[in-house]
Picture 1: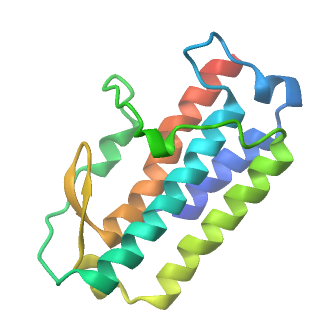
Picture 2: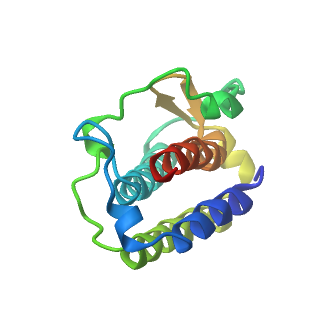
Length: 158
């Protein structure tokens, strides 16, 4: 996968360098804290797992064109997170966030071991901005999505 682990390492290293006060800080009531962003990343990865398993178990193979998911890091294009992916204040410390992110990543790596790339590439799963993406591209999207939010975390703590 296109740097999936390296992208996660950047997020983990950033979180590890924060004080708990910095991780909980919200610039205003309409913005997420770093811990809330970490929760969003966790929730998104878990939802991707569920979508991939569902698609493989229930959908027919189709051809899916590659999407320019590297554009995910362009934060000039705002995207509202679906309600299911909005943080609910689950994490109270960076330790909790890091533990959950480790758990969600283990699930992603398990999917990559369980299914071959051709099977993952043959299932279409809708994305709100890019349209249908393959399961394989969804996994790669996780890393780009994390880099997008890493920039948001950096802005909050600057």
